[in-house]
Image 1: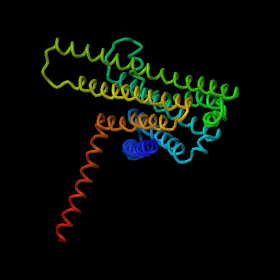
Image 2: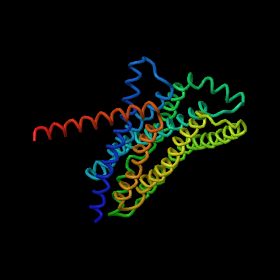
Image 3: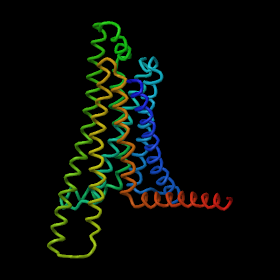
Image 4: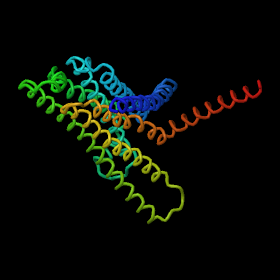
Length: 318
């Protein structure tokens, strides 16, 4: 029964991976094509492209980890593969979260309306500094993850495997405590960008509420583009927050399950849930961005036209 559940979750994970790669690759392809044509890239497109690339890498690492666990458990248990996988998973995980936070911050400064001098100063300069902020996120993520991953004991997973047959030795208990503290540190680091994103969300709500009050006092019945921009930004931010919470919990399941016996099913289930966040959020971003939405509708229309043409040719031959 357990093997059947593992196999089912594994193939579902492959399906989620395929969907996520499709959505994020579409974002990157559309923005890079526009970049080549115009020879410049807008700040929002740079953020979305960086986010898409980080999530493609994250999806590949999660699926690779799941693939090794199911098909090559002996390779999975060795220290070298553990360090490489853990480093790239935590690195791409942190990059994805930081880039999504940068997107929330960008929405906040470009759409919100406040009159504080510091806010106005950042609002006028956000387009100039966003590339440096993204680069800073990369440097910060590498700076945090590389020493932490190096501190992981290479024999930890081997101890977990050995625990099923023998009692834990004192060395394995030390490895377990060290691994747990490192994982706890890496998980707590992600709460910082999450807190920043949450703050941006509440400030956007405050800005929208104040804007609605001004519009009601003005009693104008015309179309309100600022309100629409607020709503689109809030949808993107709140979808990230909800999906991140689910992803964070699944990430904790996948990482903490190494401390109990018979962990494969728990790890695969955690990674299956973890794939939902980078896979589904890309389509929410596509629907919330005018250029990406128009490009997706154009692609969909082209595919439907090709299918109709093939169907017509088949009926004509009959």
